[in-house]
Amino acid sequence: IEWQRQHDWDAVRTRCHELARRARNELGLEPVTPDSADFFRQMVTLRLPDDAPIDLQERLYDDHRIEIPVFEHGDGRYIRASFQGYNDEGDLDRLDAALAALL
Image (cartoon, rainbow, N blue to C red; front, side):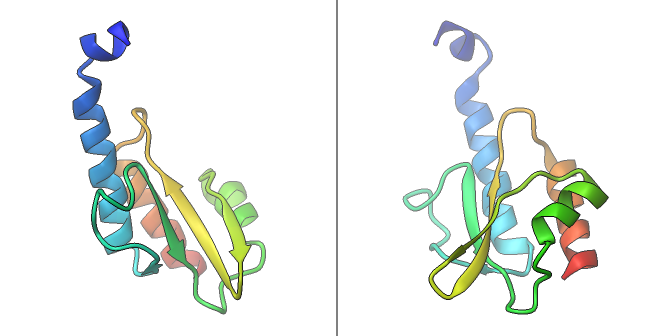
């Protein structure tokens, strides 16, 4: 707790939420929650298109070194992007470019 206070972790959490919000709004995928911190903080779930490659998670990692969960729930497939203190805008840009290439 002291380390987080010394490193202004409230600002880090705010920056991470902003990256998640941008992912929600800029990746071109269907969000499953409203654009509100009441519904997500640093992690956001987005619905993949029906024709997304079945091996998307593996291709994101193998081809782009992006580790992100891809999962099925009900009748849909989703990704869950999580942004932590070590992530920055470049990580979001890399995810956006990788998804554009693969979807």
